[in-house]
Image (cartoon, rainbow, N blue to C red):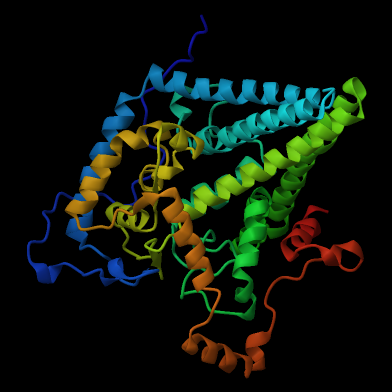
Length: 453
């Protein structure tokens, strides 16, 4: 019998922004700010939806819920994540065996059937690796186990983005400044317009096409996302070049490992042992599984952040308390209804609201606490946005299409800005890579190359 590693008492990795108080709720209706945007498509929040007394009271209830779950963690939770890890490993091994064997099948029907089964299993393994295992482990949800590799400092997942780069852009920036335009760079990923607060430009006409490109290559967008962010974030630092060089080299090293494994090493091994057809079935299966994983992760993440009622914030409150932060996470997130396996395959990001308020709580607990979180939201008159996957995805596509077209005011504002040549100056840092094949690369890729060497 395999022994579990020692289990420590769980504690939060999320800092309390400000001490919460036990101030009672404001009873006077005049003291409660209204949130008219709750009934508006694509709402923008310009003032705090709750009074400080209300948000502090909300924080007390959510903190108590959080503490109750974290204090209860134990061997069952450790066994759960180890079973997930084992499922990822063994499903990948079986899938890769099937893909290699497909090339040796005598009949066309057997070849296609085996390839489809292997590709499906590999897609399942990669999705589970990224969502329920990698995403959650790298959030620190299982650091309390003191496991040698199932912890946020050592685990790395099966995509081209290095874990430290993702943890900076996602764990820190996205979860701290959720849905604040200009601070949360996941709002549109610097590529797609999803709110009125992003000025319209002619490139936004291609919102739908840009979204399709992003969805099919989502792991690549995630990989270069932190490079694009960090250039601006560290622009005034004397260590800018050193920081960006470290990030860029880590990125290209991870890309080399992933591309080398899926598209060179494994097909080559299949070719040497089983022949050319096995190499082709392995290569095509790997490419298809990566694409399926990209599309799935894109859909789940966008359904959690860009439905009709996902609220966008215009600024960060200088006096934001932990309760205010909770409110922003709740209003800026959307849940997706589904069964147990659906939730597992989404990494429980189908409970995006619960994840955003408790990012370091083991995600397998989100379903059990969701009714309590929903009741607390209703108590404080906060929207708890949830819906079926088809409904949420349709709203995401509708939002992206809506913001591809300018309103009359936005069109006039754009025309006015074009009359001022000063507003057309390109303020971005120019990458050092010029000419040759480099000119065909996206600017962020050229930028990463310029810092890597």
